[in-house]
Image (cartoon, rainbow, N blue to C red):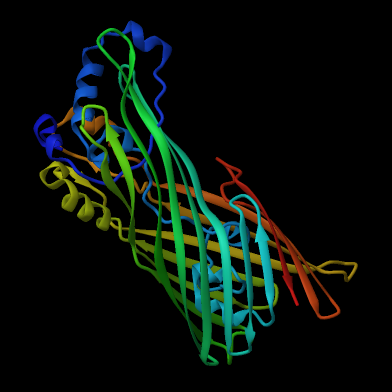
Length: 398
């Protein structure tokens, strides 16, 4: 995209849907810059080289409820049915059958099995977002509405008291809908492009748990190492640029994720967690180059390692009727958006550098056990300062 007017003619790429609403003051501004931007965008059938795509975050979605309260550092503790997504090997840590559900991003899962092998199934809305583009030229703005629904099956196997493995297979569906508007020469809004799609893909997750300290997973003190790998994959959607004869098929990449974590339990009361997520953002740029060729020049998105820290404290209630768990966490999150460092000023303004952010999380649970059955109620905030992005959860073990 370094020479936009020429190279956008070649563009074929991946996409997302955007809704534009021009500001009331746009009609009173000189229309030349907006008209130029409209012409550029209309000639570009590759959404990834269009300024409206600048706000899209490529990072894989996070799991809500209890993991959210720990800053997402769950790959090594992995002791509930939510491990079906995060680290399937953790299913072997669930001592009995479990059914769990949560709000926020709705989630429902159930796990069953025998002591050394357990299976689980789940359905969830793993992501839902609206991305808005800041105004990069008079009368040109945009937004994207997207959601991801996922359903999968997972299994965990205890190969040895210190070694557990697991895998899951899931179907993930992405929905996109939107349009981009721009102000023309006469101050009139015009539809520059529309994007819509509903596409599903099958993807897999592999997990490993190693008991480094302690005779087994339930011994105290204990130290566990968790590893999870989720290969990347592509969704497709349809993008229709106003000046084009027909809509183009575009692709959206979810990059590969490799997570490493440690969970230290010094006692029944304290659990300390550390995790690093390796997100292969470079796959996004590689796919962009395959799709749009020379129009990808100047774009970059470096691989990132996102650290997560979490802690959970448990204490019995004075009444003897249950246990309260308090938790908190930090997630140092990368921008996850494309960066443009070429010569085109409009692209440089839209795909400008963004900063890493420190996200703080908090959560609490009430856990009670009666007649061989156990009930846990969760309340968590995924983002304490900018959210709160609350989620409520319930887990029943029997």
